[in-house]
Image (cartoon, rainbow over all chains, first blue to last red):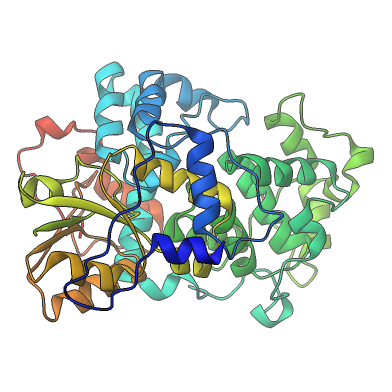
Length: 289
Length: 147
């Protein structure tokens, strides 16, 4: 395999010998593309052979844009089976721009009806602005943790059971499997995983951010890492956490939210706060997503 | 040959960098395996990126982006979309030392003044809201702060 890579990437030994591009694959054959990417990636673990159903390219983005429903998005977006667009991988890689998506939303909906959707697009603009102005934010704590713990109280690496989706917490394992298999997660599921990793398992947000960037097709250092910092509380006023009732409210029937399968997530917000953040005063009121 | 570097933050021929380069320029994509390894991309991420690049029907080269851009441009101008990504911006900065380089901003969603408090999103949103809710064709001043 290394030999093939060498053959596909001619050495630049002299000015007279210009490198050649890869031979063009004759048609848009997904398996041929996957085979080529495997050939070009000799460092990938042999166990890493999962491919997402989400396909790249502008035509695929346009298909998703054609069924955009900004009004429905606004009313259902927090539900894991809500009318989300799944345009984010295409936006991440510039296949389609946020301005093109915004313009389409305003073609088919009044500004007020499209506002929640466009506000979410603006989050990306915000993260990118921070990335340009404060590149150090991407991998460093913007602020201290507001959890009653310091950064040194958090583990540096993800435990194996999280990477493998064998935590024993049914809904968490469901979301991890989805991440591994599809390269996509609904934003609410991302928050659940981030809250679980940082606050139930007390792992540094950087470890979780690296994990997501490896898998998410829309993984963007700014949007991803700063969202992790938001959940961890190093870029927000308080930590993001949730309870099983919240997961059940926003999940479909395919997610196991029985208490017997998710015991560690069960309980009131007050009880969970006391358990997860024992060094903090009890909250007066909790705003949840 | 005048080149347009289509990098992974702007895999599109609709980007203003392509138009700025003109029809005679050659857009190229560079597959840098070492960078993908450094980023820890799984196969599904790599395949998605390759599909996006393949879809453009442009030459795809394999190797070190900086070295390839230097070699293929033959000293001619290189165009590229701006990016805050350290890998991409670092290569562009290195090329800028001895190359004619045009870095073209991406269109921005909202016109937000440079002095806006970015400490929390909703302060940003309050400044962005009006222009974000306006279609591109209705915006009179198309200059914005994206870089």
